[in-house]
Every structure is written in C-alpha cells, then in structure tokens.
Length: 116
Image 1 (cartoon, rainbow, N blue to C red):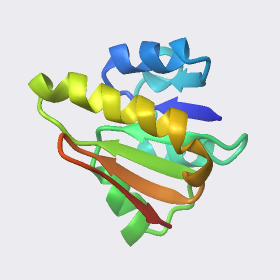
Image 2: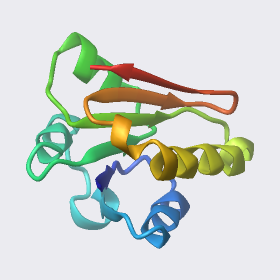
Image 3: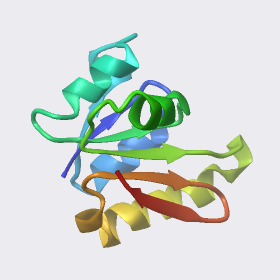
Image 4: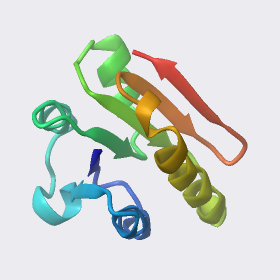
C-alpha cells in the first residue's frame, strides 16, 4: 500500500503511518502547494490512496468525476486527534484490502466506506 498525504494532514499522522511500514508521500514535504487535481493524478501511477482533511476532494471525486485510487477524508476537531489516529491506523491495518476504489470518511464517532 502507498499513501499520499495531502498538505492538510496532521504531520504526526504521517509519522504514525510510516512507523507501520507503509510508504507515505507527503505533499507538504515533497510537493508543497500542489493542486488537488494534480494530487488526484499523482494517486493513479503508481497507485496510492489519498489521505486528506480537505473536503474539496469529495467534490473533485463525486461532482467532477476525477479518477482516484481511493480517498480517506479525516473530519475532526483537534482534541479528537487521538481517536482519529486510532481509527485511521486500525483501518489501514485491518481493512486495507477493501479500500481500493473507495471514498472513506473517518470521524470521531464512525468510519464510513463508500465504493466509488
């Protein structure tokens, strides 16, 4: 599995995912200010899941029909970061095989996975 972490993603999450042995391309580190449409293109070759806190990816994928491998959108308030971290890491460890061609949303209360 390969992940592209959008600039909006809390960097501590990037480090946590890397500690699991998962390859993470950090937009903040390598492609600062890259546009969402370009991140979507980057996710196709080689295939990579997009991790973001930017709701604009929903519009990009659903309204504009921009192809992506998969998206995980994190929606939370800062005090909820530990719970979000736990949900995200569990998802990546336990359900990574079902994430291809999905749009997932992780909130404090639940994780929702929808097929694209």
